[in-house]
Image 1: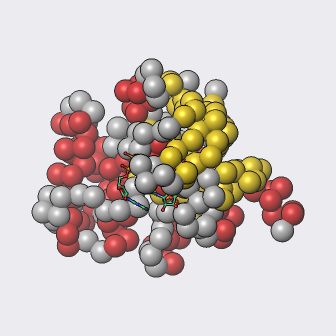
Image 2 (image 1 turned 90 degrees about the horizontal axis):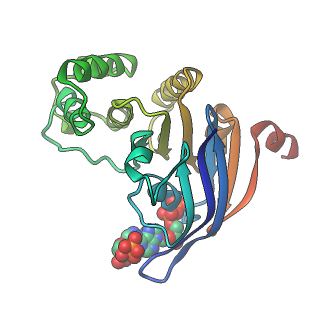
Length: 226
Ligand code: ADP
Ligand code: ADP
């Protein structure tokens, strides 16, 4: 089945800006998919709609067969989102952030702590578990957002520019982590404006420009054309 199916998606903001002008896109289960495009192309808008932070103007979106107009809660349960902006409470401690996120999904405390420990260890943040989030470096904050997005064990992880502004060493370790969880069966969609990032990680790629998909292909085919 398709992890994501998008048909005729349009978004016009209140300002009159037509950010998406009719997008069709399908992401298969298990894929590692990049949405690549310049600033202002519509990447964040697309992700915002997928994660129901932005209302669409027209079109249809379904996540693992759950239409977001009719089965929003079921769709949301399948998705973990890593936004661009760090949006935690500055004073809350790393472990508490994950445990309270798990609480939103009704995950029992003992299970929540177990999962938090698992992801903090895998992401190299276990030493920071009792540190307030404001004390973390930029790269650590990114990794904490990834752990938070995974706490309810979504089938699909969506990341908006996951490694923007992160130094190369941390970027490589994040790439490796994402490849590992993809190999374990989590479908991944990320936006990026680095072709290199897409090239290193992704199986399929769609290029978006001025609110339209101008290219949609496998990474192997794309590299042949360049
Ligand atoms: P929606 O149609 O989804 O409710 P709005 O059009 O009401 O969204 O947008 C909310 C406000 O955010 C707008 O007034 C807009 O000026 C502002 N805004 C936020 N980000 C941007 C951006 N990248 N470009 C232009 N305006 C923005
Ligand atoms: P990208 O993520 O590819 O940089 P965006 O989806 O953020 O692109 O933006 C697409 C277009 O929509 C841009 O022209 C941007 O300025 C505009 N835009 C984004 N958010 C808003 C908003 N809230 N209100 C008005 N315009 C917006």
